[in-house]
Length: 451
Image 1: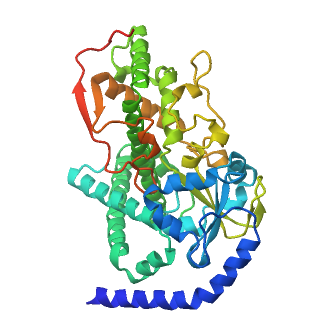
Image 2 (image 1 turned 180 degrees about the vertical axis):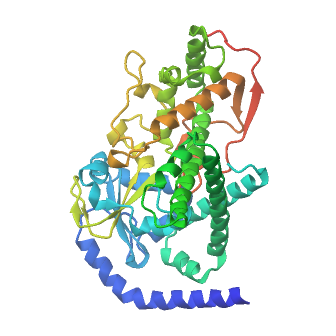
Image 3 (image 1 turned 30 degrees about the vertical axis):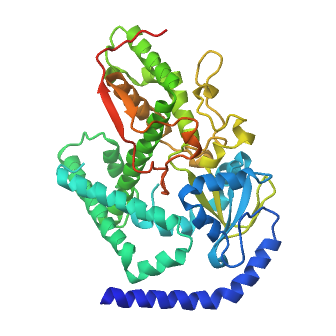
């Protein structure tokens, strides 16, 4: 009964708000459109880009790519529903350099980011009971999916009103967050006990906890909230981003068997050349670092399928971007790593092909490229601190799996034809729709003959 009452209240508020804004938004739309020459494809009075978004929701990132590729400077303007929001989206490396380095203070996370993500991520970008682990990860995945839906909502006012009234999926989100918070707090309290009993804890979380004692927090509750944010950030970065990257990587390898053979040849040759190593699990950091082709293949996979396909900042003051685009205070400024990987102006005519060789010099040595041309790990002052660790982790997983198993993607992998319409779902991360079903066949040999 109460849910029905809340629903009617929500609908009434929405209708009143819509009616009161009609005249204002029409005037505002004309004013904003006349103040800029930046292209704004598929935008209409009042509804902004809503129609195009709804028509292309299933292929959102490719829709953005298509629009950006037709603009003179790889930048377009975005108009929100009822003109309630404005912003730009770009795939221009010079603009990204501007956001993340040369004018970094003017582009912040802002309320658009924090209002959507605060419950899950807090202010910072295990349990011994397996049943608790399962419950936590189910709640975490549900919370992440809901947060993604917030980001991609064409009318943000809807989810904000539902959150205020605590109804529908916003209520479920709140319940999931409570489970996530409790799990994180249990870890913190357990780790506090370990630190008290032993002063030799050297894991990363223990070091954060020890250093947090000197950060000037008013009480333990405030300090624990900070540590909770650290834990959730660790899980998001280590669990989902890496898993997403590896999913697309194995999908692409199945569609490019010659690359799979080269990777296998590279690491088995390396193992054979090391007298004290007879299994991939024994490879150390410096040895994994020598796997140049694998490093190139991982980079190429993330160029085409970046785990975080689009990033958003908020403009603090009016500004003019290097390409001449004008942005106003309060506008969002998005940059699409997914679109950048498909721009001929950046990568050449073969930009949509999976070619690890583009990352190698004439001697087959991996060559890193401009971070603002390849913002998969962000760039400038926002460069991901875990970049090298992520590569190390992915290399370890790839070598261990490929050494032991033949991997066959059910339904076929990422051929050039299938890459035209890749099977992703709309989320904060570039998740593969329905996951990656595979068959594993245990290898009965270690070092095949290559011809």
